[in-house]
Length: 194
Image 1 (cartoon, one colour):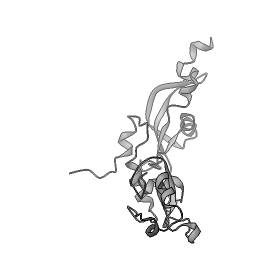
Image 2 (cartoon, one colour):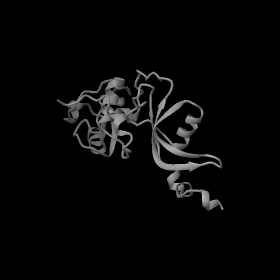
Image 3 (cartoon, rainbow, N blue to C red):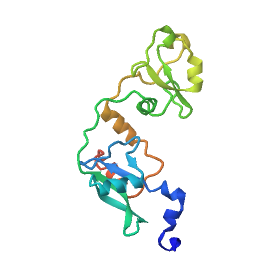
Image 4 (tube, rainbow, N blue to C red):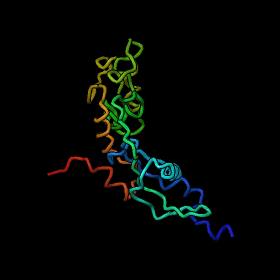
């Protein structure tokens, strides 16, 4: 009997982790672009029943309760506007995002770490203005030497990014998975090419 009303979606534990919902602010912009503001489908359905969000788009997949069949939301919009933060947290992820996920010495991608431009051993501090993304090879090559001593130069000087700047940079790095129902809401406020 149980197999009669349970769909393959519910029986498949991998499917339970799929079908995330894109979360939009009340102005129909994503709460964040990078990382993209996504909720597990369970959270989206809970928010619908608590009257915190409206459903904008749905997946074909459904879930069942004993008395209800519910299509899984793919895009939800908050009923109350959440004011975006102006201050950008100094995190490894935001640092890599500011630097475009590239080594600031050689420009390579992948295997990134971070480097203190003025080494901590020479009084350098861990701040937006003194830390850059660096590949492991360049980081080892520079060591605790100054730029002049190492013979290296920066592609861009480090600086504190603004929240808008990071949001715009994040748009250039779409997530690995973009559901077709999300696309219209991710780039609607992007500048159009003439």
